[in-house]
Length: 324
Image 1 (cartoon, rainbow, N blue to C red):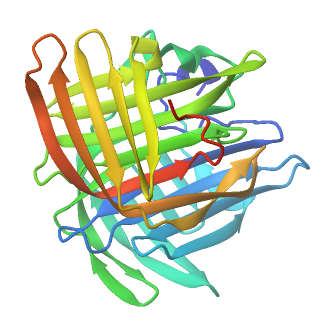
Image 2: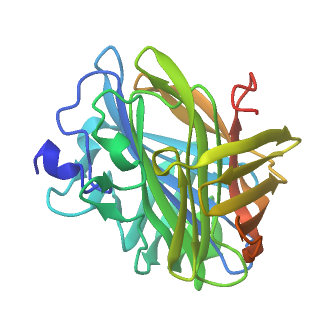
């Protein structure tokens, strides 16, 4: 598949013959019915500045326990005409996760079946969640939302524990490029007590042509309608403040106002890319809570209000570069 064609398929492997200092990772989050065992599974590849190439799978559980499985570059493969990647004996598609990993630090085995994905819409001039910024050839990090909400069924054995995800919910996204941003807040939940509701929110400081700006990519899915609050849609970040274990922020566009309050983050630590080298650290929680309220600006009419549990929360803003 050509590099140009891949623009409209963010789910597929973008790297191809990527140069040094490059990473690509897929993020699968699954939550069981009781919300007792949320789990994130992240397969990917890294090409370090010195040219060393390797594949990996890392996991983080709801209690913060994380596992890192480092594999040789040759263990990674990807399909050309559809989304399918393999890392060693593990296989990932938009409909299945097959895990078979053993290491001194832990083990994970099993199979999960994923329901019909609900991706961020891909359009001719807006190929996914990044909108027209996807066409910029010099971005530090690119982002894709591959499914805002889908069903999950199946079982896993993690460190000898049998975990059932029958009747659960899932969410899938990915990142690729050189490095993660210098500062960001990320909140995600699709566990609002009923299907059909999902929030994904990312606010970050973005390098741009020798300077930087605070950009937002936020989507609230409610009963089939996606309310988008992104820099490229004209949405404005009205306020952002940090709390102990959380953050609050407000976004507005011409028609709507979105208020988000995330709390209860008790993070574990994942590895993150720095110029393609997986030496950074991300503090991520999978058991936070997020309160969401969407209103119509002109009338004040409430369109949606709800509380999401099993919320993914990352608060990576040590210098307060995002606060307003």
